[in-house]
Length: 539
Image (cartoon, rainbow, N blue to C red; front, side, top):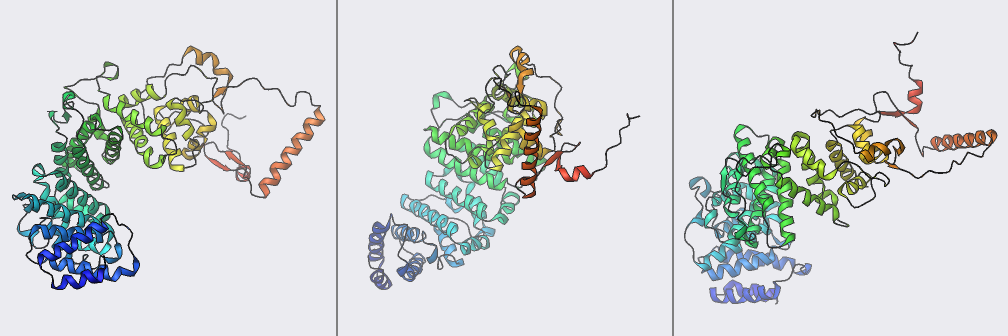
């Protein structure tokens, strides 16, 4: 449609004609996401004209059509000037039934609470969609949102979450997520003044039908109820994402600690739920893992301490169902070929690492799954299909973050004992971690662990003297290349090798290093200049 023609007709058109004109435009551009740059100024004028119509007392059907047009136009960042103003954002806020601007201080109850016709509800949904697009695409709109207290208006609407229809709830939560993601300064206001963490937790409880059996123990999901519906799951994901933003840097206090433990219990419930598809279940578990990483590690005992449901005697009566779900999730992410390990795998590895470091039962359970007692040591640790093999391979991954996270996870499972780690990985795979930790000379990390000893299998004990400590496996006997050389030939090859090392070190291709007594690395030339340490046992 010709935009010049639409604009000229809009100026003098009546409500019915406006609706007809814009409906035709919407139908034609519903799937348009890339716009003609030559018509940028015209689209900006159309934005202004539509906002002018929305400022009049028109019928809900006309309001909805206008908002649909704005939603389409808001896909183009360059034409949002008229919308990203105080007047424009207040207009959209009122259409969404949010208390914004001066109304926030006067009335904290959400105007979504009143009864609405079906057509009025469609207006609210379209307005929320517009706000999501505008806030996401416009820095100016983000700043205006702070001025008109948009986030506070959204929090007021959380009080009526039980009465929401699906799309109203979905886009209310999505807009709250966007504001908390794009405006870090808003997070503190939402936490302290609006109590958004508590409100969002209550939204999750209601959406996922959480039933409490104890202070921090949710009842098992009813197996007869079937999987969580797609709509409930979708709203829950938006709430989890918003909670993640709000808990990113919260130092917490005694009151917050209680709320965090409630969140941990709800997240355990999320881990035990099934949705309509495996992909959606995995997505839900991913959001739960991300949020669990934000909680104080002391709260993770909520995942395993279930007095009513009980647990395994082997692990002090703790319930390991949620930990098993996390391990299964980790293995799924390990098995995804070509996936982004940094985003997909490292969060769950970090969570399991900290859980194992601070909770003995979690560490013991995970180690039994990931690092069972060694039997066959004829194969290199990184070769094979077990979880251990896959994690050891990641210890030499090209991404430094992935490499360090995988190595730290295995190190903690080994109670931060260098000897224990080398038994499962070999020195070559573990070298990066040991250099970073200053543990090349052996020893332990700083964390204190229980004194229970790991028992080696008879197969491992018998093979231990023949294991190559660098590769971590028993190698086939190799022929000695210098066995038949004369002493002169050996001396010649040794000098040749020394000259090669000298030349490439002078060219800075390599830098000879030496392990210092404290387990750290230092350049060889520096350590040769150091005075010898006094030996109290010398004569």
